[in-house]
Image (cartoon, rainbow, N blue to C red; front, side, top):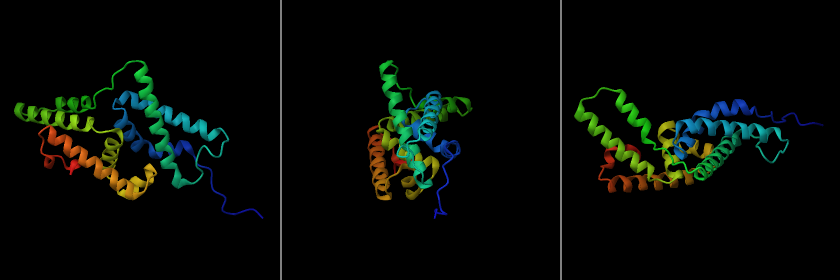
Length: 192
């Protein structure tokens, strides 16, 4: 007698579309350059489709709750491959601050406000750039997606306790970095 609760196959194109926004943020925290993020995101999608079509049951999960951690793992591997390839080509990692500076320049603030904001953003970007990939990534996902510890754990594939520890370490590193730049961490809630 066959089991009536046979799991439905996962629609990987739909899964990628569902998780695209936060995966892009993971890639942004690890790569920085928006143009490269698009390319790496295509590589992630291609790798997932190829792995799911390979017939190897061990390569891809069949349970829906394992889809997000699987996609996260593929994205992290593709970001690492991007850096390896970029290092071979001797391209420097683009600064994360380019987009913030462009946003500041498109507004018309008062000159002193603009200068203070630009200086503050540069200091914040320096502090963020000084973080390791895992710290930058967990802070970005926490504060841009506004996810709970449970949601972070489910998407990254770690325990809630591990999320709590990573966030605490990342916040501490951010505070230390901001303090070394003489920035008051009260002005930056993500560091608290």
